[in-house]
Each structure stands twice: as C-alpha cells, then as structure tokens.
Length: 123
Image 1 (cartoon, one colour):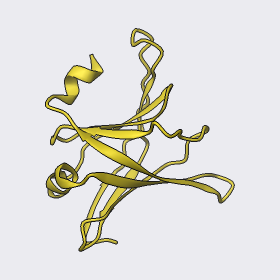
Image 2 (cartoon, helix red, strand yellow):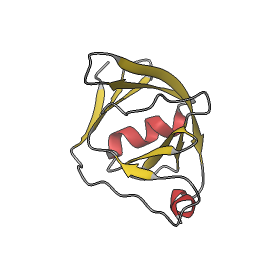
Image 3 (cartoon, one colour):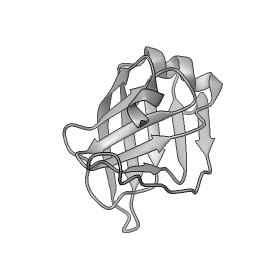
C-alpha cells in the first residue's frame, strides 16, 4: 500500500482548555498510504487510550484533518500532501493503525466526514 504516501515529522503538542472538554493534540508523526484500489491507511504514533466506536476523521479538502478518537481525544493531522487530498475527499473510510511501545497496536476503521470549513471546528 504505497502508491501515494504523505509523511509529517511534526513534534509540537498543544492543548486548549477553552474548548469544552476536548483536547486537540497535534500529532508527532504520521504516514498516509493508499493503494491502487484507493484504500487508505493512516499510521500514527501510539496513543495511551483506546479509540472508541465513535472515532471519525473530519476533513475539508485542505492541508489538515482532525481524527476524533474518543470523547476526549482528538489528533490534528497537519500538512497533508497535495497528492493525498483528492483521495481523502473521495474516500468514505480510512484504516487507522497506531503502534504502541509494547509491540501491540490499535487498528480500526473510521468514517471520513467531509465538512466545508475545518477551521470553524477548531475555534
């Protein structure tokens, strides 16, 4: 699964106590992969808590997306490569893989919700 690949080396972390009970963490690194069939896989650094069944990816076609993992964990996926943006807009779901330090991983599929303006969700 590597026909299209985007990668980020971001290491900045931010939380905002003014946003209800949600915290948004800017991810440390990710790989976004796609195969010829258009299946998408997002590989992230492992998180402490498991995602729940409400997990979803919200995207507006720009350079960023937000992965809501559970009721109090959201990851901001930044600097999505231009080549990957159209694929994300057309996809209905994406597989998330989060390797952990103990050689386990969380692997789950989430729906992709396309919105008009992602920035309005961050305010």
